[in-house]
Image (tube, rainbow, N blue to C red):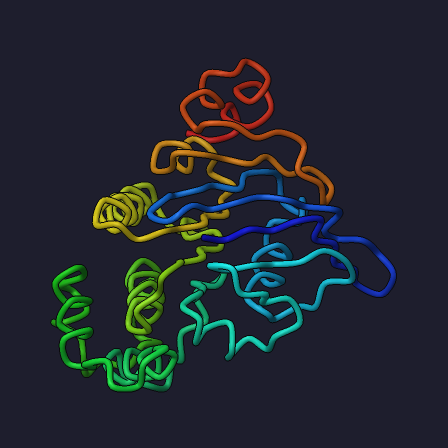
Length: 237
């Protein structure tokens, strides 16, 4: 499905992503773990067209996406839940979701059905559909950010630190939701500092350090690897 080869991205001459290669198969959930500043967010932004690579390429179902603008990548079915949620506070929950629908690859996709699916996944959003998004709690805003991306009917969902700034109970709810989405067949690429949680909900994982992928393997195997446990899993609860 997604194939990345030799991807390199720089900021003002500083290499933030260095020769990264990875794949996400159809229906697969893949994690990218690593410390803050490892290049994980740069990877996602380069995939979805928010940043331009200096080398390498991104292919999706055989189509070359490298150099295409973000809206064109979204129309191919790659949608991202950004770090920090970035919901539109002055708009209502329902208005935020309607904006997400505009990213759908097919404009004839049924908006009401998509919204009903989001409300079934997050009943609290249905209860607060006419409330301003800026008045929601942090956890509810994260649910809205995920729901907004789902309104675009993604074929591949990119998630950037979905647990950031959330309490343990809400984190558990978010990851339970991701597990349900993956169980329903949705392909996901998850960037997450909470390595333990990320490995629990994915099948394969990549480890990044200083812009480079330094290790990869099945999530279950990495979760039992003494080096990964020492460097990453011991940092989270």
